[in-house]
Length: 207
Image 1 (cartoon, rainbow, N blue to C red):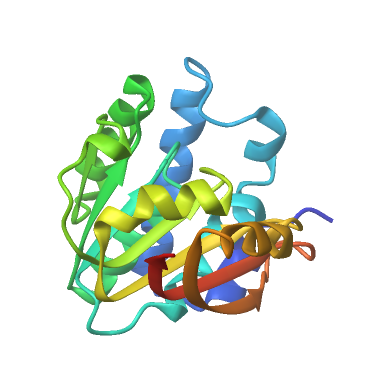
Image 2 (cartoon, rainbow, N blue to C red):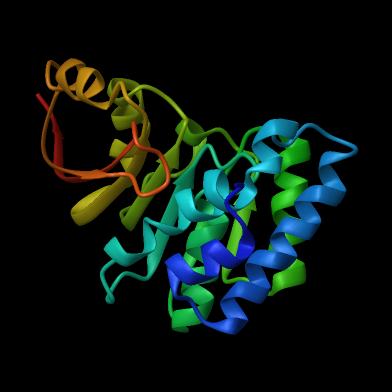
């Protein structure tokens, strides 16, 4: 049986208002995906598990004091828009979504505007954005960890936390990254994908 909106509501335990924002995001994604390829039809059919739950699972790991977020390679907003919905619900924080594909950036800006989310979207490439520290750095399916760390490093501050969704190759990528980087990592099993992980990265430094 397919994972449903009701399943997501039960598992996430978020407020009715937050659920309404997820539904509005889903509706906009369905509408836009008919014109531009934001996500594959198969993935769209499994939106509530593969996208909503997968993205939402990051939020319980976000410290209450976090206020400055950046999401690298946002695509259709996973997990960046989910972080923005969380910030809206909490009444604190702003998310910068980084997506170099112009049509996807336009979609992100539409969702941000219609849902009145505390976020902004840029079509600049990550390496072109002015370096500045962020509290939270997120990414999903953006790049292998050695490259992802290189993209993330300009946004790393003393207390920054990287929250990166990874698949079954997570351990291999961590091993490869350790040749170039030092870091602390907590590996959390994914609640949406039995082969996936949420990697919580702190103290990122180039060797």
